[in-house]
Amino acid sequence: MGPTTGAHPCVPGRVATAVTGHPVLGDFTPLVERISIEEAFANVAGCTHLFGSPADIAATIRRRVRAELGLPISVGVARTKHLAKIASQVAKPDGLVVVDPATELDFLHDLPVGLMWGVGPVTEAKLREQGILTIGQLVTAPGRSLERLLGPAAGDKLSALAWNRDPRAIRTQHRARSAGVQSALGRKPTTEQVYKPVLRHLADRVTSRLRAKALAGRSVTVRVRFADMRAVTPSRTLDAPVSATAIVAEIADELVCAALSDHPLEKTITLLAISVSHLQKQFAIQLELPLGLPDENRRPGARQGIARWSADRAMDAVRIRFGREAVGYATAQFDRSRSVPDAFRELAEKDLVIAMGHPPSPTRL
Figure 1 (cartoon, rainbow, N blue to C red):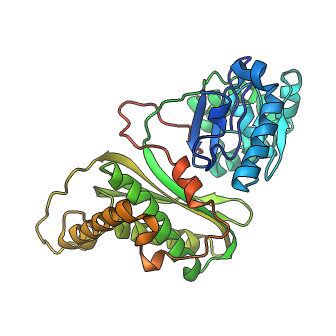
Figure 2: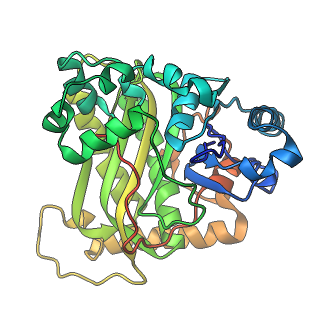
């Protein structure tokens, strides 16, 4: 859940909705911004007279999610979205961190720079080479060194966030630029027997959502997280938008295989995710001539591409009538005992619409 901006306390955390027919956060405030299936920001400044302090609200939310979902969550409470997100990270895996506005810089500056929103492995490595390991060291960097190191935009942004200057407000309405799903695996070996069924399951989930909204995407990205919590996110952009489960699953499989080959010392994975981006409407598929192209089986308008898409549409129709468990891919079966329940997953998934001119979400460099 998330913080508010300015002097408005926010409750950010790692799980935002419950399988009780309504969002947990929505029972406290209408100002909720969901940023992933398991993370959201909430502005609770206007409801403290009804439900108590932000810390009390956060504690109540944690109790309800535990009681109604059986899931642990971490929650951070702070004045800004950035600081609330960091607080929720510090609170992992199952805690509550409330940052007092009077001591927020003391709290922030002692933390590793890698916790900052927008600092990914590449940026963190660049900062480490300059001896910048904490957020406090970031704010004392001399002159325009950050600008020279990271570029003007990134340097200015990180400098502002290091001083907890974050004017972003809670956005309750925004249009998705991508669709994604993920599965936490615990600690599993990096073998095909482990990741192939998971990827097929994830591809099935994300593509069925796309087809339900008559959408397809040109870019497929996977996320592979290792035992030390480091993650890699290889991607591939296609010539034509796709929404067929088999096509997305095959591409994801190749991306994961390449990622593991690039990190041969990593023998354990803890999370897999697939996202499809560069979305556009797809009410029908334009047929293509059989030209014998090497990727013809993955071209949506080729004979095999049409066959795959048609099979998916038939399966979608069966699921609409008889439920999702009525039919599925045999290769998508895996042990999901540790994953988020499907009912919660379906409630948490955002509606998909095409983003037209909407500013992109923050990215990790």
